[in-house]
Structure formats: structure tokens, C-alpha cells
Amino acid sequence: MNQEFLKPRLVGARFDQHSVPLEILKDFAALEEMIIEVAKWKFLQAHQDRTRTPRGFTEGLELHLTQVEEGSAIPVIALVFGTLFPSANATYFDQAREAIIEAVASANQNQDGTSQLPPNLLSYFDRFGRSLREGESMEFTAANQQVARLTTETRRRLIRASQVVEWTEEASLLGLICEADQARMSFELELKDGTKLTAPINSQHLDTVLEAFSGYRKGARVQLQGVVKKNRQDQLKSIESVEHVSPLDPLDVAARMEELAELQDGWLDGKGHAPEQSALTWLARTFETNFNPDLPLPYLYPTAEGGVQAEWTIANWEVTLDIDLHNKTAEYQALHLETKKCSERTLNLSQQTDWQLLNADVQQLCTEAA
Amino acid sequence: MNEQTLLLRQIHPSFVQAGRPTSQAFRPTPKDENKLSVYDGDKITPEAAWHHFTANPDCSSAGVMAVTKGQCVDLSLGVIADGEIFPEHVSIDYSAFAKSEIEKKAKVLKGYAQARGWLYQPM
Image 1 (spheres, helix red, strand yellow):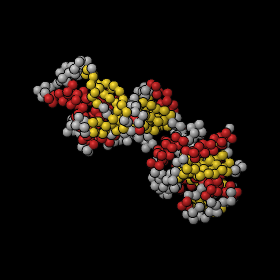
Image 2 (cartoon, rainbow over the protein chains, first blue to last red):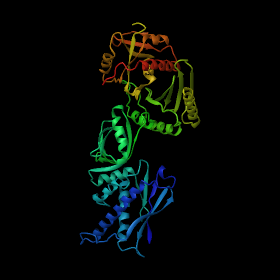
Image 3 (cartoon, rainbow over the protein chains, first blue to last red):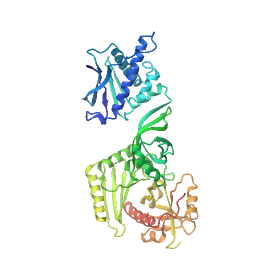
Image 4 (tube, rainbow over the protein chains, first blue to last red):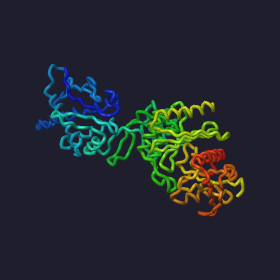
């Protein structure tokens, strides 16, 4: 038998298709562990004469995902029990759920959640909520209809209150592999700021890691997705686990945008405006969406005016796309270095049709050069 | 200076990606009054020019490339040994041209410099 236990509402672009990414299920597995431990704590609070919960306290009680409802996505979690009626201990599961929701609600109010849960139990937020990305949330409705929102920010607040020395987060990192130790099966990822993070090598990633290590001096970068450890100052300390590691194209647009985002005003020998980070993010996204992936990637450089210039060398053609990030327009110029033949046009990069013009122009030069 | 004199240009680190310089390195920025600063290669070596340039803490250089005076003159660009800022200073004058023409000439000069290769890069 089972009874509905919890219906968190997942909010964010990833959940708009009324489906739940599999990686979020890890968070719910951590939530189940947390609910059991909080239920035990609630039991001991109610039975102060006892020092431990009875043997088999959680026996026959499990949490199952039974369906996903629309809006944006609402996983339905049921309490499953092997008997006709839930055991008396199920009431502590209900109390645990309410205490967790109240802790999240208090974090929404800039409180630390320790009035609802002790610090050692708050430490479960290290794993529960870890898959959330910026701008996403999990909404929980308490029995009194109060809505609590777990976001990356409230999760951080709760973890800080847990007094853990380090916590973990999912992260995507770009860097060079400066060291690889096959005996220890570990490697070091060197970030752009020089920080070196130790990570374990999974056997399925061994070839990629060794190849990137041998390309270190040539600047062979990788993109790593995994779980990182941070200290209480929010500084990266190490990489706990690696889900994906893949070599980056030397001209990867998003990676280059991240580099350009680090420029400060005055970057060009005391002159030069820094490009705005949000505009660079827009450019990376719009490029990925609209630029034909079969065409060669451009070289990308900052401009003194705070824009970006894309450049291609295609046989004897030198092509530039001078991008005004503020107006989202660009000046295209292709010059044949021998014949001095030149074509120019102004493009509106907010318009898909103008991206098609750019794709067609670059395609034509590639075809001509082939 | 003669037609073969190398005009040494410092290339900013952000103006290099995967070893390739941008054509922007060979055109003046809007604040440069249409004059591109270079060093007279007859008076200073590429390495010495790099050390001279980067001695200013505001200035960065990934290395030194060059075009010849003759290549500039062929593009109708004036080459002025003004020695204004320091004795080896030379200006390549783009002031007679509109933005589109400046970009074309920068592309051509970048092509010449790239064909010549890096004359100095710090280790």
C-alpha cells in the first residue's frame, strides 16, 4: 500500500517539458536518507528516555517516485508500506517532512534553519538540492499550505548553518590537466587563475585525461563536469567526482567567452572597455543556436570598444565580424588578400535570418576554397 | 629607415588566440588618433622592444611581429619616424582612410606579419 507523501514543484527551464532530469533523482535519494534521519531524531525527541530508535524503526517504509505531474514538473513521492496500514512510525516521517520544509522556509526568510533542525541534519543539504542550477527551485508545500522554496542560495544558507567545514556542489569547469598519476588514478586540473584541483580518474575517462595531459604545453583544455568541494569561504578545494571530462575545441566559443569575461576596463594597455558578462553569455548562446556547426569556428578577440571580433582565415580570404554587443549588430567584411575583392554587410544578430546570411557567406567561401 | 625596415608591433595577449593574432593588432584603436605605434626595427631589436614596452606596468605584450615600411607605403599608409614618445617610436598613419578601408589594410598587414612569424616571444 502507499500514500501520497510529498509533491515538490520543480521550477526552471529544465523542467518546462513536465519531465524530471535523471540527475535530480540523486537529490531525492539524499532526501529519503535525510527524512529517515530526521524521523529518528523526531522519535528520540518524543521519547527522551531512549538513547536510540527501536530496531526496525524504518522497516517496511520506503519512499517511491510514483508519477510526474505537470506544472512545471511535479514528481509525486509516495510513502510505501508493506502492510494494509502504515506503521505508527510513519507519523515521524510526516513530522520529518514538515521540519525539513520549515527549515527551507526559514532559510527563505534569511534565517539559518537551526530552529527546525540541528546542524548535523542540515548537513544533508550538501547532497539534497545539489543538482539545482542558478535560477531553478524546488517548491514544497507544508501541511499548513506554507510554500518553501529551495534554491541554490537557500541551500547555501542551510549548509553554512550546518557548520560543515566543506560542502559539495555540481560544477562545470574549464582547465588544463597539468598532472596525471596513473598509480593513484588521480589528476590535477589547472584553472585559468592558476588554482590546481585534484580529481579522481575514472577508468572510462583515463584515455581522455592522458591525452589532455600530454597536450598540456600546447594548451589542450578540457571541460569537466562533476562535483566539487568548497570551503566555507566558497573557495574551490578539490574535485570529489567526475561525471564527464571532454577535450575542448581550441576555438570553443563558450570557453573563449569565459576568458573574455575576465577582462577589466583598461585591459588594452590602460585603454579598452571590458565586454559585459551578460552580453558575452548572450553571444555564446546565440552563436551556439544560430551558427552552422558544420562551418569552421571563428577566432574570437575582444575589441577596444567593449565588443567582440570574430575572424576566419579561409584560404586567401580574411573575414571579420565586428560585433557590437550593446546593439547586437555586426559589421561583416571578407577580403581576398590577392584579388582585393571585398564583400561587406551589416547584420542584426537578433535576427535568425541575418545569421543565415552569415552562414551562407562563410559557407560560400569554404566551398570556393575547397 | 628604408623600404626593408621592419616596423615592430607589440601584440597584446588578448589579441592572440591559439597562436593567431587578430587584424585589430594592425590598426589603431579609436583613441589612437588613427596612428598605430610601432618600433623602428633598425634602431632596436624585437626582444629589446618587448622589454622596453612591458617595462610599463600598464602594458602587456604576448610578443613582437613586424611589417616593413615598404609594405605600409604600398598600402598608401604614411610611416612617420616621429620619435615623440621614445627615440625608436614610429607611427603608421591611417588618418586618410575610413573605417572600412582601415579594416582592409589591417587585414593585409596582419597577413604580412603572420607570414613573417613571431620575431620575439617571451619564454
